[in-house]
Image 1 (cartoon, rainbow over the protein chains, first blue to last red):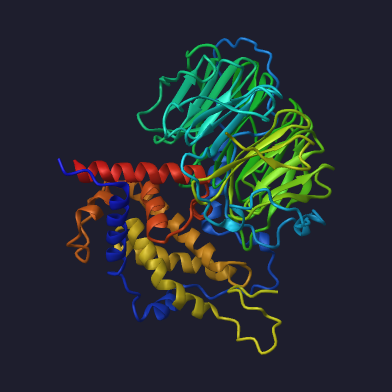
Image 2: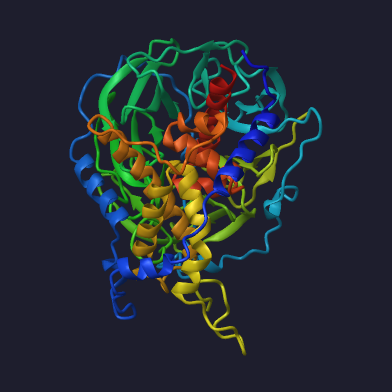
Length: 448
Length: 162
C-alpha cells in the first residue's frame, strides 16, 4: 500500500503527467498540406441556408434522438403513492443545465431580449464578474434549497443543514449533512426529505436530524443520480447507468420503499447524459438531454409513460419548468450542436400539460442553466449572465440579478410570489437568493 | 461586427481578418495535445483533429467562436472514438503504439478511467477550464462536471495507492 497523497498532491501529480505527455506531441510540419489534400474543397458559404449545414456530429445526434424517442419508455406501475397535501414548488428547483454559449445572435424572436437592462445592482457583489468567492472560516455556504410551504424550508450547505419556519427570515441549524458529498436537498413535507450526491441518495423522516443511506434496487453497480423530486406523496429519482440507460425509481415519501419504474429510457449519443424531473401535483415530466434533447417521459396516474418532449428539433439542450399541471415552459438551446453558428435560446410554452408546444420568442439567458415559472406569464431563466425574468410570457425580458459566469444550482417558485435560487461562483461560496414579489427583486439570505 | 477570431471588422486600419489557414496553424498543436491526452493515442489524435478541422471548415466564417467550437468538436470526436473502440474491442486486437512508451504510472492510471471522467480531468487540469466551461464542452451541467472530476480523482487515487 502506497502512502496516501493529499488531494493537492494528487492534482499536482496529475498536472505534471498531463503536461509531460502533452509536450510529446508536436504538430507535423506538413500538416496544413496534408489537410488541404484531405479536405474537400470548401463550398461557397454566403448564399447557403444555415440550416442546411448539418455536420456529422449533429446528424448522428439527431438520428439517435429520432430512433430513441420512438420507444424508449415502457409502461408499468410505480408504487402506491399516498397523498400529502404540500404546496408545490413551482419550476425546476433542482434543474441546472449548462450548455455552450449561444453567442450574440441569440434571442431571435425576442425583440428586447438581447438588450435587457443591466442597471440592476447585483446582490452578489462578492462573486460578480466571475471572480473567485472566498469563504470566511466557518461561514455557511448554501448548495441547495427546498421549501415545503411559504414558511418552512431547508438549506443544505457546506457546514450542515439550516431550517426556517418563517419564510427564510431566520434560520437555525438542524444538524450535519448526511455526507460532505451531498449536493442537493429536497423535502416533501416537514418530516420527509432526501439529500443526494452524484452516486448516493439519503433520506430523512425526522426533518433532517437523522439520515439513512438509500438502497436503490435493480440498478447497475455504477450509476449517477440525475435528479430527485417529490410531489403528491411520492418521491421520484432519475438515474443514468453506465450500461446506457436512464431509470426512474419511486417511493412513498414516508418510507424508503424504492421501486424501479418499468420506464426505460436509453441514453443519447453524447458523452454526458443528464435528466431533469419536474413535478406538479400528481403529474410530472422527465426530460433527457444528451447534448440535445433525446427523450422524455410523463407521469400519468402514477406511472411514467412515453412522452414527446419539447425541443427535439433543437440542436442543443433544454430545461423545463411547470407552474401548474397544464402550464409548462421550456428554454431550448437552438444551435449548440447543430449547423453553423449558434442561434440562441428559445422559449417554448405549453398550455396542455406538454401535449403541444408553441414558440414564445427568445430567452436572453445564455446559456439557460435553469428555468422556473410562477405562472404562465412570469418566467425566470438563469444563465451565466444572471437571472433574466419576463412578466408578460416572454414578450419582454429584464435582468433581475446580474451575475457573471456563475452557476445557478437551484431555481424555483414556492408560490406565485415567493421564489428561491442558489448561485454558486467559481469558488466554494454559494449564495441563496429569495424573491417575495414574484421575481422582480431578489435578495441574498444571510445565515447566522 | 466581430470577425470569427474577435477582430473588429470595422475598426479603421484593422488587421486583416485571419484566414482559415491561420486558424488551423494556431489551433492544430493545442488540439492535437488535447486529443492525445483524451485518447492516449498519437495516431488517433491526428486523425480526430484533422477530421474535426474538416468538419469545421464549411462553417468557417459563420461561427462566433470557432476555437470553442473546434474544442467541442475534438472532445466529441474523442469520446465517439472511445465508444467505437469499446464496441470493436471484442473483435480486434489493438497493438500498442510504439511512439507511446515510457509513461509514468499516473498515465497508466488515467488509461483506466472511463472516457468521460478522463475528459473532465484533462479539461480541468490540463486546459485549466472552469466547471462551467467544461460543461459547455461536454454538454452537461456543471454539477455533473464536478461529479466526474471528483470520481475521476478518486479512481486515480484508488489505482495509484493500490
